[in-house]
Image (cartoon, rainbow, N blue to C red; front, side, top):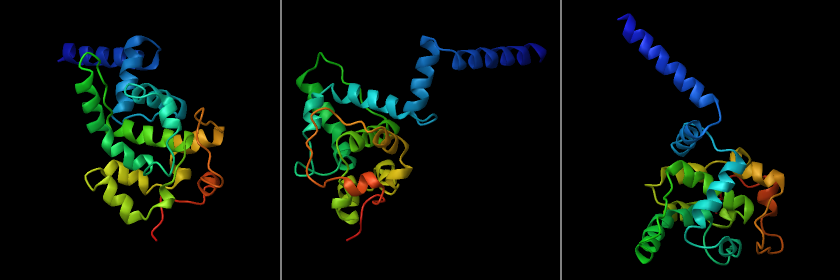
Length: 187
């Protein structure tokens, strides 16, 4: 019994040391914990994640050109990314495309909302819910979260960061940046 206790305590000590130091193993553990939602992404970590994962299929300049006239908000766009990633993979079978977990999807949506624009308020809530789909509860929860309570999005907005080459339309995003919009409207 004592041998079992000592081995469990030894394992716990090793895990604590690994998790609290900076090395490849602990970094991988933290990365996996964030991907599964056990730890939160910082705004800069989420930005790096979005840039790396989204640039697997298209250039960041393409994301910068996306605007309210191009299509729905990023929370809706994210629902189609899995299908588009598999299509891209089939066209480029030698290139490995890394998918996103639900927690990573939420982080990536917040990044592009902050760096490109958030036009969720331009759509009726019912339409957004229908486009996102009831099976995407994680994205619906994000939609119901006020922008100022979205840590990644509000953090990047406060820092003033924008994606280089973003299409700026006069007056777009002013209410969202001021925090007046709380996760879409219900016209």
